[in-house]
Image (cartoon, rainbow, N blue to C red; front, side):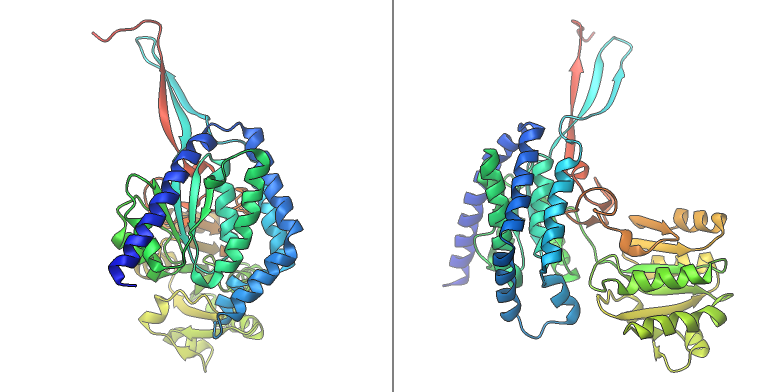
Amino acid sequence: MAVNAIAQDAARLLDTAARAAREAAGTVARAPAPVKTAALHAAAAALRARTEALLAANAADLEAAPGLTDAFRDRLTLTPARIEAMAKGLEEVAALPDPVGRVLSEWTRPNGLVIRRIAQPLGVIGMIFESRPNVTADAAALCLKSGNAVILRGGSESLRSATAIHACMVEGLRAAGLPEAAVQVAPTADRAFVGAMLRASGLIDLIVPRGGKGLVTRVLEEARVPVLAHAEGLCHTYIHAAADPAMARSILANAKMRRTGVCGATETLLIDAAIAPTLLPLLIEDLRALGCDFRADDRARTIVPGLTAATDQDFATEWLDAILAVKVVDGIDAALAHIRRFGSEHTEAIVTQDEAAARAFLDGIDSAVGLWNASTQFCDGGEFGFGAEIGIATGRLHARGPVGVEQLCTYRYHVIGTGQTRP
């Protein structure tokens, strides 16, 4: 099929899906909270009941994608525990307060008019993501709870898994009497469908990309629809001179090695020169025992000989693997300067017992999430109490950090008068 014909076919498929989603969005936006809750509980039950089918679909995806890195395979893999976590995630989202119709603020003008800012759904959301099949359930749940319809376009490598999960979400919608078009999976794995989504101004209200730098860059460059950007997770952990050594060792091991393929994993260690001679060898020993490799600056290599020399490119890399860049810095200002140069404004952590130092660090970063004495892997919607997340927003508009149900709402105004007319 010619390129133009493929693009035209994708545009037709997207137009059909988006118009159905637009109609469904109106119904979901007005759905009572108990109805949405019932849909999510029924979908959770379906996930548990279809565990074997989900595992079989995922095994087919894994078999069809040989040669994956360990980190990519980890992101793609479903296990019984991960399926149960998806089901629990749906139930946690269901238990959240309904965000639609909240009075965000209210005030009275001198003329007696009462003005209320009211939360309302965004409308139709287009979600473009890579590899992680659980995003299908998380995004569907968050969009449904916030009164939005969603069109999900996952990576071709997870298509079978995403389709099986989508069937469970549809079962939940059907059980609650909600339109099935409220949650849709792209009917084709062709990349032209992504292009059609990005050009769907007037049909899709917001695009949310979740994936690697290449995907996000393409979306930002081509989209004619507003984008809630999720940049790469080039996260830093800074161990300050006043850090508790045992705490620093525990936090860094978790921040780097708990799951190396998640966007909240620490990719660069910054360690204060005053503490590096005694603590850095222990940190390297801990992580090396867990299978980690290193890219280190000259000062770190002097303290721990034999480490691979780091380049600027290493400090600019989101590894998503068991590799850690290491730099020795002279205090908070140097740590902040490094983060400003190489970071992606995602998540940064400081480990210190000095409150003033922690405040200076947290106030000095521009990133969406800053942590004090905690692992960067806590940058997660579930850990924030959101039930799940549709992504980590690193832009400056609308939302930052984990995006949950409240962040998937916009607002409108209600103005209540008693007969006022404008002079």
